[in-house]
Image (cartoon, rainbow, N blue to C red; front, side):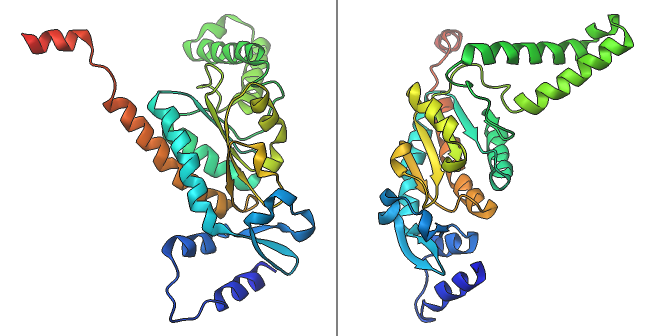
Length: 261
């Protein structure tokens, strides 16, 4: 069915008309495919361009502006050296989310959302501290004083915690902004963020109310190539914000004294 949609969409454009490069990229990445027409949220109707074979075709001409708005918010947080948490636990989202977060040095969640990560952060931080201590103790050899069975138990515990908390080592406090790849699959995370007033950048499809997040990005949230395309565009705003933070960092007193000499 996807091929039929692609063919019908491509054939609708006369050969002598040049397609906008960005629009062409989104078409190739599958950004325009929404969910079934029957699942379209009433508030998403303005973002649906058409219906093909019972599937909503998103009006992706609006997507770049939404990315620009979300990117500006991300850049502002990064400029102030704030903390951004990236979330994407579905198979199509995991790789793109992990790649961007690790590349930019921010915490991420790609396994599953643990209830209370935001609303009960004190408890989470204690578990993270315990995980970090176990890893440190093992690396330094401090666990060697225990029996073989005890060391094996510690190793299993480290592996279990790594599965749960891998990617959260940089989450030293409640984040200033959260980026969610697939709002409909991460409603608990979005609700927690809303409860404590953390703004959310959310990639969402035709089945979700865009008002649930502060910075919605309408795109196919069930396609790895679509999510990757969006995340790659958001990456430039993260990098710009981090560069601006470095450039605008106040000069150390020691440096000023040396210059005067």
